[in-house]
Length: 156
Image 1 (cartoon, rainbow, N blue to C red):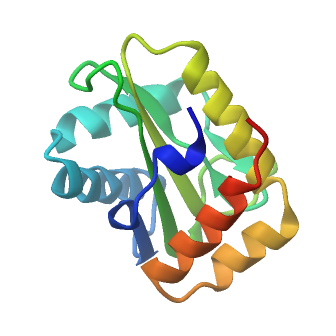
Image 2: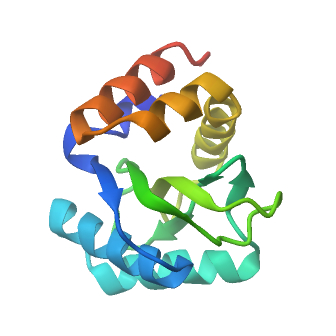
């Protein structure tokens, strides 16, 4: 499975206000629920439980919150790109505020597929130009185009 297969224009959000890690995850869960008809509380609880194991803030202003959801079909993996309107404390490994999120939701039965996606995401977000372009984007369309271009160049 490739990153280009799990993101769509409707799964991108620009300029989300949050203020705190908890609030951003709540708003993200609501956004995902509206887009997908999944349960926002199930999404929120899954993301919070994963954060309790350790922050998904990977550094450089980026976090990759992720969780397994029993309600997802075994072939259904979803990715959401979210740009925040300001950096927030996410307990990232480098202590820097997070401005970009990529939320990964996978079926409960998924194993290696989701690990491969996380590795691909970490590789993309390690590139300075990619992060800078996403931070400077001013619309959902621009965010999606930047992400899709970068994801297409990722090795399989």
